[in-house]
Image 1: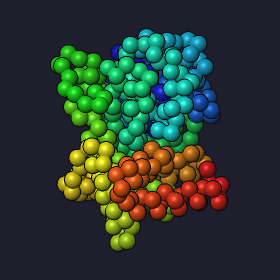
Image 2: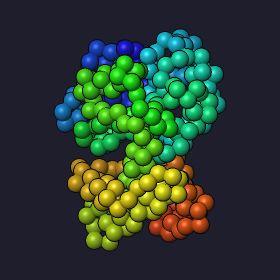
Image 3: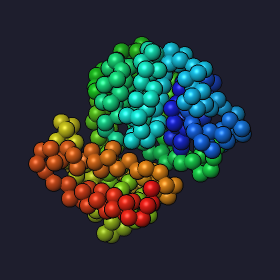
Image 4: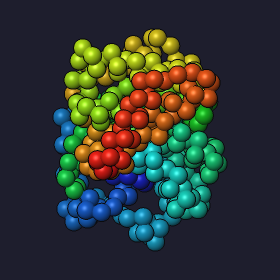
Length: 315
């Protein structure tokens, strides 16, 4: 199969390398020094179970637009930051609409699929999430990734799939490439479950500069992480997605026992990049307020991060 991966950061590059190693054709969209390194010396992946150091096909948006059309690909994976989805659709919406292949969002947050469905036929939009993976660009062209790097994918907003459907084919293809993948009939539920973790550790790690394991096992911070997860569950229920105590406990235990990693929000802060505040914390506060509920922990860390960024010029 031929894949386009839009966003060659830690997550996109890792999955791209897995697909390349399995014999698929992959084009990665990148920019800046990272793109220059990918084009000059190839991609280097450091993972505990998978090492990759090979030439790849990496292009800029301008090169993609000039040399490819969306119809050239069997699937398009979006692995850019959630705060870039609207800008991508504004820039490349017409280009994407000219194709017919599935567009899979593997991004943080719960709003990307809805944005995509507002610009593309709903049948082309597949929601997805990467779980139990930590991946970052540690130098131009070099990726460090950790964890089993699982995927969950499903039709947006929900729905069963036929055995011979493109979604089932993608699931089999990813699994055969060493990417453990599960196809779900309710992707909204899965996206909100992941937001429990993202809201629980991402903003607090950016405030404290602590990794996920230190946060969740800390006497005081651990209880705040749990409270942030409870507020995300409250927001999910306000959005019509039923999450209960069992979901909160399961996600808290998952991140508490996972390898100690820097969250994507902490890495973005250290690198001077915009944070996914609206996609994560903002989604929780907005849904809670819309139904007259409070999200005090999330509101506080969101306000503190915004003040820190504005005052110190961290980003």
